[in-house]
Image (cartoon, rainbow, N blue to C red; front, side):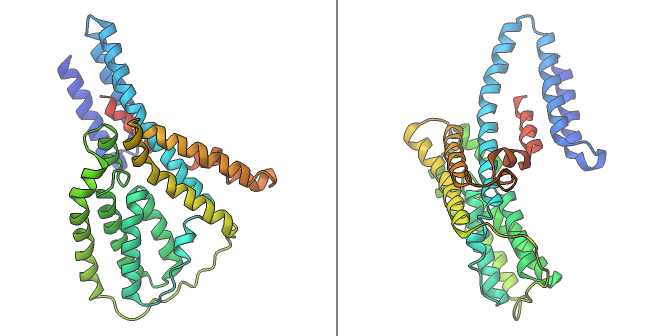
Length: 298
């Protein structure tokens, strides 16, 4: 039995690692691997009730992670649907390449501590397409964005999925991870910024590409952005005060944001309101990535 489970596990992880070579989504592989491992385990174990009880314990822990990711991703999608990130990006006016580099680096660093680092990277790269026309110049900024997003996500319990899982599992605390990793993360950001600053010269060439996208009204953008970021910042406070798991805080916050957006758009017609609803946000989130975490049920 043990050998069969180990073989299934190793083959599953090989398939996950070579996802792009075999053209099979890693979430599908993770689901099949997890179920097969438990199936072999229960078939070769005399006491089926013990195995079922163990499975439900694992599933309970995993469900907390999945509900947290589901809620957090939906909050971020709602902010994006309301053009909430424009609240930050519209304030960037400098044309100096070096100044913009440091602004982008700092913005990404702190934003990725609240959002996850992948979402932050996507948001900032989208911004760079609007700000910078020169491709080679833009690539410098994209590189710094990736570095800053990973550095910023490392020192926060919300900034990286792996860190979030450890935090939800009570293996780390929010206070300790900030205390231990904030300064090393700052160093990881500052060194590349300083090096790249010597290579960048002159001013930014503004992007010549026009967009037909009409921004949401400023009040809507600001309200949803502030509520969304406030909800994400509220999660560790809620966990510390109530000792309830983080997914309870994020689901509560999602409910508050849901109510707020329903009230905000109640006078609009269905066509306009459709793209701004929680239902549409749930359709846009990266559901396969959430299902991928079922591999931890092994």
